[in-house]
Length: 300
Image 1 (cartoon, one colour):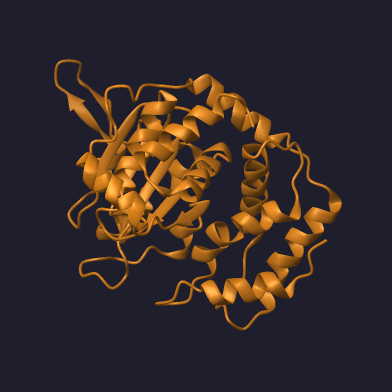
Image 2 (cartoon, rainbow, N blue to C red):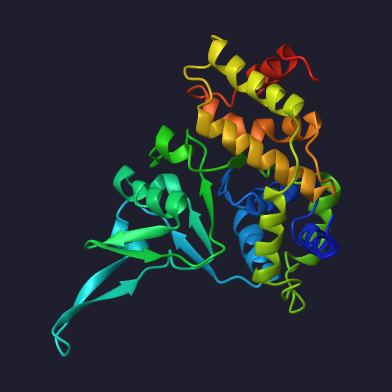
């Protein structure tokens, strides 16, 4: 592991207590140039995690509260007529930050949700026929309320597919929650400054692309993808794009653990966060079916 990654992970673990694996998955998602969906109830630290990640990496940060009346222009920006210049001038929206928290994304209408598609896939937005590039690195962290809560619009498959990973923070364990109560929730003190730079993050992301993947591991990954299409438990199997997402995440997980090649265990570790929201059945997180899928494919 790169020496500068250690303080990043250690500080995040002090901010979000008792969630080391979820923290590693969030960082892994960023290293793989993906976007992260966090599905959980309010109050478990989703906003705190996203803000701390931006601060520690020295990235610009913006939180957008999604509501039913939010419009695409409220996120992307708009071309507004300037009477003095007698021309339209583009005013960028909050999407023009390096880390964007789309809070409670499934409370917005499908039209507003879809406004993020181009930004997340292409790193740009198109307004009035003009294309505007987004700052790099660009990382969207979206939070989603559980489906059974009132006033939510389920994310369509095309939107879910734009998120490399979906994780849940869950409740803290008793020891971590006791420490949280003792601190009064004040864990992000004034010393929570950058521990690295955006340039170093871009170097990490480029290094992830160079992590070696053997033919045997590629064949194993492909077998998992194809098996998802053959099982009757899932309405739709994993797409080729999902297979590429799994490969990127496995490379990032290997890099995060100090290795220059991907092991089959790396694929298994990231499989559920990458595949779970893509294979989800209505009203079910599909954990048992995912485990069955993993166990049905021989590990090389």
